[in-house]
Length: 212
Image 1 (tube, rainbow, N blue to C red):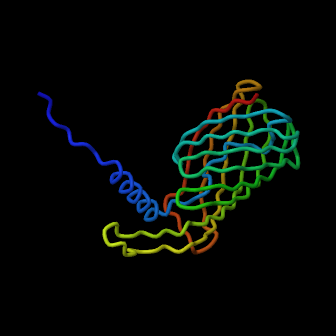
Image 2 (cartoon, one colour):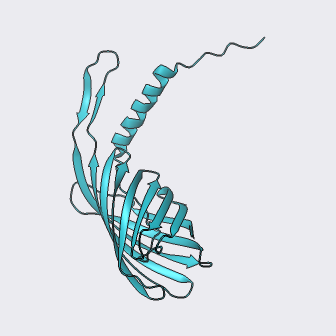
Image 3 (spheres, rainbow, N blue to C red):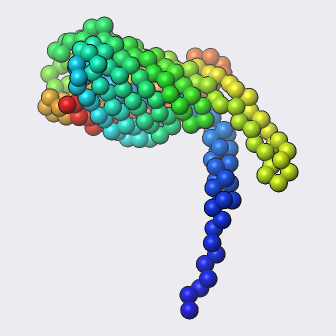
């Protein structure tokens, strides 16, 4: 005889899990913008694509970039805590020397939404392409309201809130050939105002990219 296995009530389990997840997100204050870059000031080139996947202390990161023109890229990012779109314009775009670019992005975060501005510089040194990025991020957390499922009374309400922070990123790409590259990156978060504070804020990661 087979032992009787109690069935899970999905209609009750799923809302409970979502409520617990929402509470965890709220208490951990993890509404943030993108936490990695793995990107240089050079664009991918007119009509070219670049895909990239990486992992590190900020979790996983997936990126796609497309060259609208020689100096202008659009792209998508998908990280552990955020997803969004971005555009990058290279003011100086050198294939064998120094480059300078700015990028603007926006998207959704776990527990809110974000916009950010990147200022990126990089240079070519043989197969190596070191880069540095200064990022300013504005985060808006969504208003949340939790109710007791039995009485319908409001347990607590979190009002809409905004905060700003910055990030300094240093890294390098190593180009195996014209298509494949490995990116190594380290970064540090810093507060722009008193509305946010960081404890351990050093992030290290690596990514593998392919341009075509």
